[in-house]
Figure 1 (cartoon, helix red, strand yellow):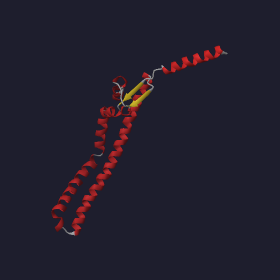
Figure 2: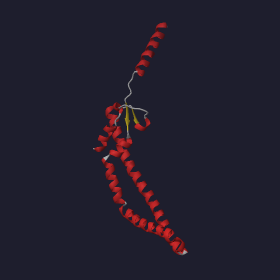
Figure 3: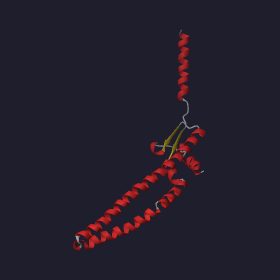
Figure 4: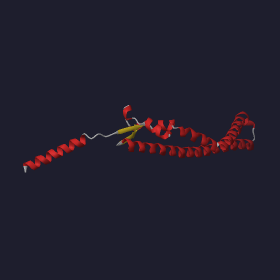
Length: 162
């Protein structure tokens, strides 16, 4: 009985030390850095500018009218009729409303495109994890400290550039 207990104890001890000594391969990635350096990001920016080009031009024209209306209100405000003031205020309010709507639409499209780029980054990370057998990948923002040896940012950037 003592032999069985000592063999079980020795087996458990060996098993525990084997688990404790198992190496875990950890990588760290700076996702924002990859996102900013991706060549696709520039192409997305140009595509968005082209998509919203006519709206931007229209808003710039309306912005000029709103500035003129605002300047006229400041300069001639006391001498203007109520209907003229109302018309100028409406011009300003219309511009502000359209600018806000445009900003919302643009940010929504920008976020959609950024999501596509993030999916490409995720795919590249998955490939690296599979080929290099990483156990854990952390965002650089989540790591308090990490050496360059575990930083896979450049590897991911090279994968997404292809």
